[in-house]
Image (tube, rainbow over all chains, first blue to last red; front, side, top):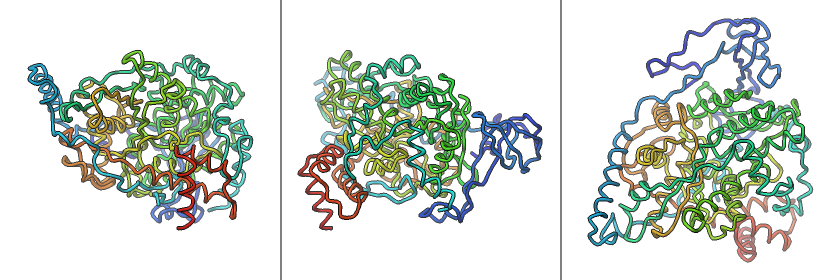
Length: 159
Length: 470
């Protein structure tokens, strides 16, 4: 699911991208905002060891080859410089194939609702004789892990 | 941290004052307490005026739908006399496809009134689409800062779709790799542009959600003769819970139980480059839900308007597999193909409805749009590509980031109750940690903490004594 993926769905292939932009083209640039040593403290090592990167799209202010420096004017009118990352960048996310583990859900649930209604309509004892596993209707379990993960890069479980 | 980030963070207060057009100092009462209600109403708009602003912006008055098939499905596996009636508020009918339009509409209206040239928000969620759409309607420029990719430039399909839709509405999307430095870099942009900070956590944004609670109370009264007995809310940063609950109360629905629900993502680190693409959910999960409930003032504003512990009566968690199953069920038996976030509450509501009497009425208060990238098939196909196992079975075996287990029967949908007592203690601990050394909480502070945790003074005092002993 990267911006320039190898799509698995037939028919969704991106057209061949241009390798060079001209002035006025709609392009995407990449910039390194922070080197690893400039990053926030307390990050997990797999994040701390990577640079913080940024990508933004805009109209090229000059011609450039892929990877070359270019300035763009963004939709808000800001001028941002970076390395040319894509020309006329597209969107190639998709639905993908059906999920086999979900395939029967619709068929089975429709049948279950129909059967329940048929039983009700038959009227034998109404709802009292109906339904599932008596005494088991509660919310299961208690507490468990209270979840974790800090929004600001800290572990923040409930202690 | 680099000198660059330190420098901008040091000017945080000054930048946010200008960018929000309000000074939070006016509401501070002590190192612990502040006047929450005064802050929430400082914009001067009544609830009816907020509704009128939203109507002009095309936001709100979404359909409330009874889920008759889902109700009967739940009743088919409930004990005799159990199985509440289920309803959903179809918030996907808003212009940008989610309840977040309510939040954005008030912020953008104010930005326009106050004469800002543009707005900035930091969000990877539907809020970006909402801000972009409303900014387009008001003729304002818009920048969305988004944590989009891991260091290999791979992004969750749901976030890629949110980038696309923001750009479709004319926003500049600043995409970044994983890391909390998004916040100081947003501050830099606010400083550079002079734009309005359309924070998710300002009183403007959260006030805008109150109309959702108001509509639910009124529409349920028209439909069933009373407000709902339960309102189920997908919970992340707390705005959805807070705004909806406040609206219900302001409409007189003081008896409605507020049940928040998050997807359990325990074990995954929110700032991890490796975990980033293994979450399968971008919001509505415990990675936001727990830290923001237990310390709301970690947000990008000095005082967070979203204070969920004030309003929660229960906090449920559900597994990833249960939410994907609920999403498929909503499509197939209710004819509502909707996006991921609201279906977290649907999964929670299925479990809740089973234990409630038939006379109970349960409203799931949002849906969101779906489509390529946001669809549950996209998420599950992507999870497999990222090495997460997807299989059918007992969802109790779901392990976030490693195994997604899709239930095989509705009886397997079983939400877990989080211990609210633990969350409340954690909140009080955070509050005490934030004050200067030696500060002793006053009676007013105790009263504030009791209101902020929906408890009483005796409970807060006992918690403080317990924490001091520890």
